[in-house]
Length: 101
Image (tube, rainbow, N blue to C red; front, side, top):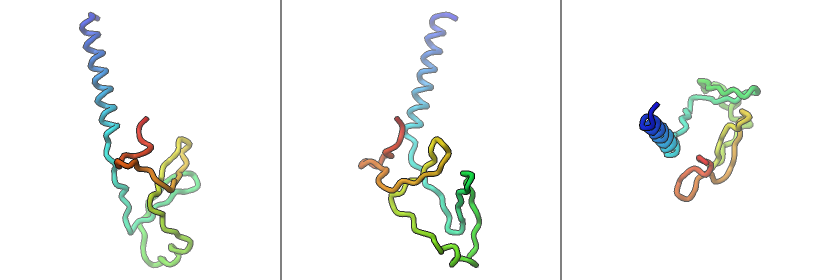
């Protein structure tokens, strides 16, 4: 390959990497879509499920249930385990505290 071709390929690769990084870094937060007629499960094997719920056994459903506190963050660790963290997770400017490096 000629030197100008190599320089052009390197420039394109650098711009592509920069554009991809910039797009990923500025991704806006997405709402977590939860519906009142759905149940969301996390089983013993770490799998997640969504179920259509009825109202015939609502009393049983609420036994032992607790409200999720405000300012709670749910995340999956590198080990595949689901975690929840109570407390602040947004910076004062509204950006995510645990975002990109």
